[in-house]
Length: 184
Image (cartoon, rainbow, N blue to C red; front, top):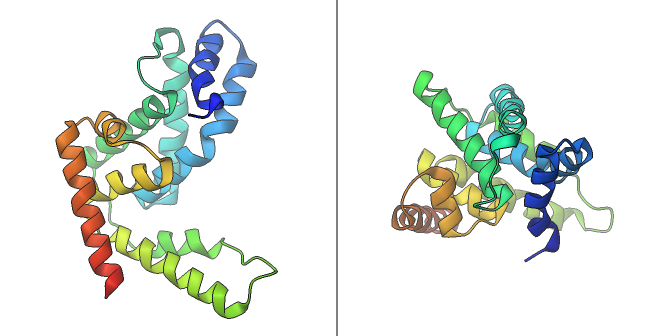
């Protein structure tokens, strides 16, 4: 395990004692992954931004109650996931594939690659993204937590608030579905 992951809890505890530089380090380390998770699960850039800000607000508000029982990343993603679930309960969002398209528009080709390779890589990423978009919400969340945040089945279960076997099942069904769609 990366040493930087191990010291996230130490940084959070230091922040709880008033060390704002520790928070800055945590924020810099985790903002990208958190925003990507929210953008891809919410499928709405404006909502993702709102939830991103609210997640960090919750981290700040609960700094004195923080207890390193799980990895900081797991705790952070659990807060974000719970906020997303709360939003879904209040208002079911209308999902379109346009947001996913915009995510990949920002992927620039490396100068050294041949155009036909860039196109095929782009097409593969696009097909995977579109296949992920078509998954049911619970399966999509499990896949994104696994692929983008490299969480274990146990951590996915913790973030989503379900049992280990349920998380494992969602991940298995999602991966099978993705394999089928990408094989077509």
